[in-house]
Every structure is written in C-alpha cells, then in structure tokens.
Length: 392
Image (cartoon, rainbow, N blue to C red; front, side, top):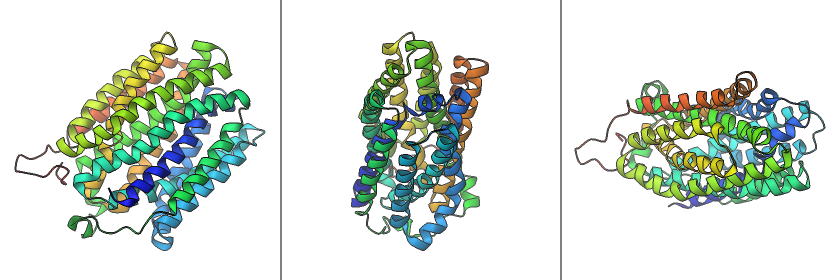
C-alpha cells in the first residue's frame, strides 16, 4: 500500500481512540445538565449538522490550500473545541462547542477520504478502505474502555484526552505526500456529478452511509449508553463502564473482520457484501433493546460489528469506482452526516415517547432499505473482468 494509506490509517487510529473515549460519556455528560434523551441526541446531532454544512466548502479549501493543510487544520479545530467542551458549565455551551468541532471534522474527513481513494487503483480500493477503517476500529476498541475508566475519575477528563489524541493525529498528517495518479483511470477527468448521481452504485453507497450515520450516532452512540444506564445498571458511572467495555469488545470483533472484508470486497465486488451485511445489521439492531444483561448486549453488539466491517468498506470502494472525484466523496460524506443529524434526534424522540424497541426498529428498517438498494447495483460481469474494476 502507498505511504499515504499508512499515514491516513495512523491518523484514523489516533482520532478514533479519542472519539471512542468520548462516546460512552457524551450522552451521560449532557444528561448531567438536565438533558433528556432528545436533548442528549441533539448534542450528538450538532456535531454531524456542522459537518454537513461545512462539507460542500471543503472542496474549495482543498483546491486553494491543499489536502494536507486542510486535514491538519481540521484536526486542530476539533482538538481545541473538544478541550473547551470539557470545560462546559451548561448544556448550551456543550452543544455549541460540539457543533464547532463538526466543522473541523468535515475538513479532515473529506480531505482524508479524497487522498485515500486517489492514492490507490480500483483493484486495491476495498483493502485501502479496510486499512483506513481498521485504524478507526482499533482506536474505537481501546477508546470506550479508556473512556469508562476516565469517567470514573471525572466526566470531563475524556474531552481533554480526545483533544490530545487529535494533536497526535495532526502530527501524523505531516507525513502525507502529494497525491499522484494511481492508475490510468485516475488520470481521466472526473465523471460529471449528474452522471454519478444516477449510478446505482453511488445511490446504494449513499444510502448505506446515511443508514450508518443514523445508527452509529443515533441508535448506537446515543441510545445504547442511555439504555444501559436506565435498564441494565441504573448508575451513570457504571453504565459508562459497561457500555465502554461492550463497545470495546464489539470494536475488537469488527477490527478482526475489516481487513478480510476489504479483500472480499475487492475479490467478489461490492454488491453481495453490502446486501448481506445490511441484513445482518438489521437483525442485530432489532435485538439490542431486548438484551437482558451486559453479556448478551456485548454478543449482539459484536454481531452488529461483524456486519459493520463489510458495510464500512464496500460503499466507500463503490464511490471510488464511480469516478466522481472529490465532489462525489463530499456528497457521500454528507449522506452519512445527514443520517447522523436526524438519527440521534429521531431515536431520542422515539425512545422518549414510544420506547427503545421502536427506536431501534426504525434503524433496522433503514438497513433493510440499504439491502434493497444494493440489489440494483450491477453484478460483476463474466467477461474476465478484473476484481475491483469500475463495473463491480
């Protein structure tokens, strides 16, 4: 793999460790200011909302300042806003600072994915996405457990830890090199966005990304900690620890699957892995609110994690196959952000008014819709087509 793939994987590792530390703490920290499930979801959604708003502007910044400069600046913005969030003394302060962090997140997310997909050819795109995701997953595996321990010391400590890991990520970004054309196809002009938007591969990938944003930041990040605190433990500190350990185990499972998933996606195409994984995710998500204890919850989250390994690599590779360039990547990223904005709010509202099973069931319906959309993707042709070629 090219140097940039390794550097970006290191960046994703550093970012994810810090983000994973904050995940089990953020909703409970917001609840400490008197926030209910809906208000706690709004804190999560604010981050995604600002990512969504800022994403269209990142391409212009990339053209003017370069991918590396935009990526580093984005990491610094998130680091500073996270440190300040740790000093919040009101719900409004926390909400505003998390929103500012979303701007920086859009900067390094779009710039990083653009560099990643431009650094490899189509035949290695799934594995490159798997390595990049693997960095996030290894960090996510360690992060929640550390976050649970830090929460035992102070509910504010995870935010300062997150700021530190983002600083490390910014230092790693100094190792990025200029992106060169990875293949002859990459030297051709980007496919017009109007054409890309009609491509079934792009449509299915964007729906998968939206479903992932909805469920990762809504049903999973927002509701699982609250479900554990309200129904399994009854104690916020213990809930943070239980949630952190369960998510760490699940992240370990996902990490074990992600590199093989990337190889499978490159070998057999994007379509079948997206269909199968979306169905697995729908079943596992429905089962979460019926978990009678921490052990069963950990097992269900682990099954969900195994499916996530495939849904995290195949859509990104499919977007790269369309040849849409940074505009397609920005729309793809915005799809996930849109799910991350609506998901926490909708999941929080449903959990408050109707109940947790309904909130999780809605997330499962989105995964079923993703599986249906993926069936429209073209099958690999039988005419000696190379794995990972644009028709996959």
